[in-house]
Image (tube, rainbow, N blue to C red; front, side):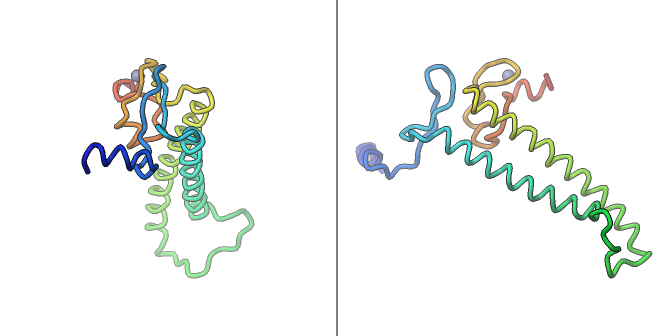
Length: 146
Ligand SMILES: [Zn+2]
């Protein structure tokens, strides 16, 4: 697409919104007045998915109290059950950490600090936010573990 064609398409609203820095280093979605709301919706959608995944894992790990033993369980299943449980616990930990990050990201959207690093206060790179919209730290601070 030639540059002028692009501009025309842009003017007609046919070009995907571009994310950009606001002058104060915050985060803007160009051409979208509802940018922050979209961002929140995106984060909340992910939070909902995480909660679902976590609920599934927890159901597998700990049958609801008072639940009857499941049919089809044999003594020989125990070893693989234990293995499965360990794997689920690790997966659940990862999901919970992601939930924490998402909660923090939503707070940052509220505060208007979204896109800024919690560690050093510098803007988080666009590539990083693209890959991890809930990132609250720049790559440097993340690597240092603060
Ligand atoms: Zn940082």
